[in-house]
Length: 232
View 1 (spheres, rainbow, N blue to C red):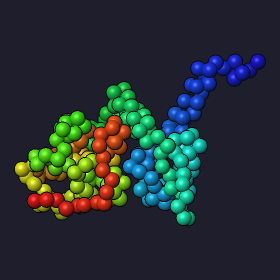
View 2: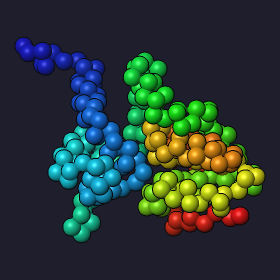
View 3: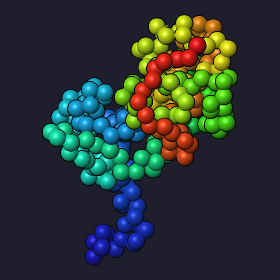
View 4: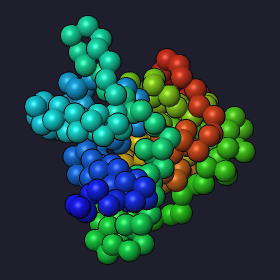
């Protein structure tokens, strides 16, 4: 009798979970999952955003699809990928990150060297921001790309992509707290944005994690056309 034939139901479940872990256990696939957490994307878009070759991007996406993590839809000549369970995927990666930050020295070292060097202030928590949304004392700024903002964003937030932030500094209010957010906990642009704004005399902090975690944990979102205008 083989070892497989003696497997218990628990071992069968653990085997399936191990296969799931193997599917996400690659640096490129984790990055693709971060992009897919913003919303559906074509293979071409994911290739451009990740900087990977089209064929390599497609290969990694197929691994995610076979594992049941992603699904496909054909739109004309394009194949569009989306997450089968956005909430579960986002929270799984969040838990993985928390484990790494506590127990893997290189993760903390990289955060200090490449992230906290821009902004080492404690972030605004989701609960704190939720009770301040819509108040005149707070301005929420989404520094993701315009098309990501259009797929979903925090209510009342304005979209100023990181590349455009410097040229919009004069339009930002000095009498309001500015809360910035990006794609997730390892999107360095939120750190860079908060640091830049404070260096220019503005009151600014970043939101903990990013938009996918906000949505996954049940906080309200909006889906609408982008508006990058900042009210004086």
